[in-house]
Every structure is written in structure tokens, then in C-alpha cells.
Amino acid sequence: MFPILGNHVPLCDRLTRREWLRIGGVGLGGLALPHLLEQQAAGNTRRPSTAKNVIVVFITGGFPQHESWDPKPDAPAEIRGAFGTIPTRTPGYFVGELMPKTAELTDKIAVIRSVVTGDNAHSTSGYQMLTGVPHAPLNRENAAPGRPNDWPAVGGIVQALVPSQGGLPASVALPRRIANNNGQDPWPGTDAGFLGRKHDPWLLECNPADENFAAPGCSLSADVPPLRLDQRRSLLDQFRAHAELLDRTASAANLDHYRQQAVDLIAGGQAQAAFDLTREPNAMRDRYGRTIFGQSVLLARRLVEAGVSLVQVQWASTEKNRPNGGGWDTHEKHSESLKGWLMPEFDQVYSALLTDLIDRGMLDETLVCLVTEFGHTPKFNAKAGRDHWGRVFSIALAGGGIRGGVVHGSSDRHAAEPMSDIVRPSDYLATVFHCLGFEPDTIVHDVQGRPFPISRGTVIESILR
Image 1 (tube, helix red, strand yellow):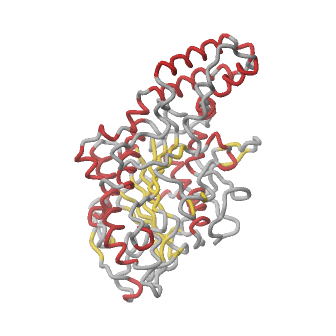
Image 2 (cartoon, helix red, strand yellow):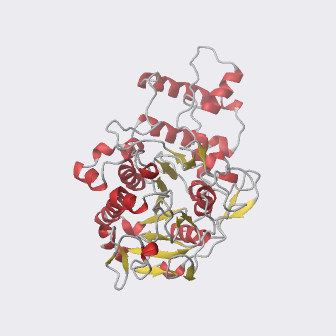
Image 3 (tube, one colour):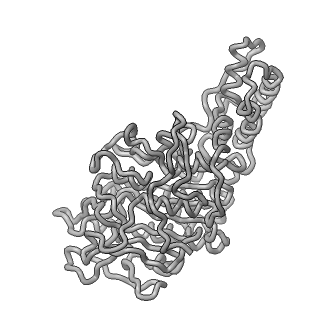
């Protein structure tokens, strides 16, 4: 994560040449944002897109295929689990009974039941789902970022390809980093990797459910009142008068534009309004649920509405006293956890997002991706839990050029192995880029200028409109 505001430079009456250069580098009190915004503008030309923006809902811990998109009602009890199935809006298609609200929306959703990573470790199977590239080696839990596993996350690629709008970045991740060890060690594939730090998605570690929530970094520090900000603006104007100290390059000439966007982000306007959840009616906030996850997904809708191209929301729970830390890594009490809190909250939030986008006329231009790092084992373990399973699992896409009411691929009778139309993470991400207007052979460059295609996957044509 990089902060929106950096360390400030004390004001002074006399400035040496070195200090002038330093001010030019840090801008308004350590503000590196103008340089980032400048770089974001240098993206590839897009073809006509079916999606203006993307919301990625990432269920960390593993989303259980048996109780959701791929139930097996005819399997033995130790496979099918404790729950039955319910019909959906898609004729002949049934989902797990714990998804009643989602079942009413499958005519808008394409379900993919044949995703394969071949990896049973959170961080390395997750790396593959975030980047489309298998980790080397597979099945390496607590893997650290870095070469050779430094392919950029989808958000990093979007940040590199898509110009920012209205002072907002092209890509945002919230409300926490995806990490091992209680958030201390980030997974590989959660940043811009070989594209360089300037293209990292903006990570906002926050709690939008807090009644005092405010966007991190989007307001002035206590020691920088508006008058002082005005003084710094004046100082920058003086700095521009000493432009001979800068290289006369197009890059330097364009800095003013991006610096102004950075000022707009801090001083108010579109960006701060996007983060202001108090502007939402109470009924809408209740519709999503007053949880970190629910309010984060609502905030994601507000951010794409304001012009952010991609927002990724990680699952977050404050109920740490529950089994499995309140999360989806259900190695024990799997069925109890699903019925008690996990599936009800998921069903409420996911259905709220889709219906909200439908009501606002935004679903056709917003691609919603419900993904996870892997599924769960066909058989229960000795603690009534299901373990990690990357050999086959399910994801779902909706809106933004996706054909609803589609079920792509299948698994065997135990949801243990793929049976048809295998989808790799690279194919899923190639489809996301396609909907955004970028074909898989679109080129990005690493920090050394070497060209790379954004994906080596194949677009899943059968789920497109």
C-alpha cells in the first residue's frame, strides 16, 4: 500500500536550489500522487468495451462449491453436506439453499463451475486467481511477494492501462490487504509486481461500517489547515516560476495537470464525496448490511459510480471469536459456520450489490466478479470441516457484457474434479480485460521497459453477450 499523503516538508523563508528540487519532487507536503497520475495516463488504446468498470468481490478463505453454485444433492451425505438445493431464475439450475436472494438473480449471472488452479495453498492459489499466472512452485503456503512470482495483480494492470478520473485512481482495493498471518504478510500478486510501485492499486485499510468512517488520506492532516494548504499552493506557484531547475521534458510539463488532480483529491470534491457513505439513505446502508464487508461493497459501488475503473473488495469479519476466525477457511464446523453467519451475509451483500446496480441502470456497464482462491474438499474432515481444494471450484460473473442465466463447465458427481470446459484463472482474467476493452495481447512494460502481454488466457466466449 502507498499512502495518499506522505511526510510533509516544513515551510521556510529561504530555499536553496536543493530545496527547490526537493519541493518539486514532493509537491504538496510529500505528495507523490501527481507523478502516479501522470504515469497512469500513458496506457494502451482501448477497443470499444462492454464494461466501464469492474467490482471484484474476493471471498478469501475459499468459497464452498458444494453449498453454493455446484451442489450435489445425489451424492452421499458426507459429500453433499447438511443442506439441500433451491431452484433459481435459470430454468433447470439449482443452487444451495443458503442462497435464496442470489437464486432470484441468476438470470443476470454467468456461473463457471470448472475453475482449476491445481493449488491447495491460500497464498499461491490466490496468486494465480489474482494474476492469472501459476505460482512457482505450487502449494507454497505463506509465500512471499517477489521474483519470480511478481506478475502484477489485475488491479495493477488496470492502474497501468487506464487513466484516472476526477482525482480518483483507476484501481482501489479495500478494506484490508490479502495476507497471511493476520494481515502481516501480504500474498504475492496483490500489487503491481514487475510494473513497479507506481502502478500499485490503492489499498485502503479501513472500516466503512464505523460511524466515523472517513477515507484514509483524503483529508488534510491536523497540522495542515486550509490556510497552510493555500500557502503550499502558493509555494508551488513560486516553484513553477523556477522551472529552469527542471528538465524540459514532456513529462515535467505535464506535472501541473496531475498535481492539480492530487490537490482536488485532498481539498475536496468528487473524491471525498465518493467516500462519504453518509450520503447514502439509511435504507440502502441497511440493505447491504452494517458490516465491514457489506459497507465495503456499498463503497465499491460508490467508487465505480465516481469513476474508479476497478474496485476489489476482500472479505472482512470482526467476529474473531467465531470458529475459523469468522472467515471462510472452514477447517472446523463448516456447516455451522455457513448457516450461522457466512452464507446469510454473503447472500445479503451480493444480492444487494446486483439489485442496486440494476436499479441504478449500472449493471450493463459494471462487471461484477465473485471469485475466491479455491473451493473446499468434497469430504468433511474429523472436525466437521472442509479443507482446501484447488482441483475444481466455482466463480460467477455478472453485468458488463456478461450473458446472464449461463452455467459454464461442470464438475464430477462429487464436485471433486472438472468434467467439461475447464477454465484457468488466466481465462477468467482475459475475459475481464476483454470486457474492459483490452484484448489479452495488449502490452504493458515492466520497470526495465520489457514488453509483456496482459494475459496468456483465452476469453470465455460462451458467457459473453
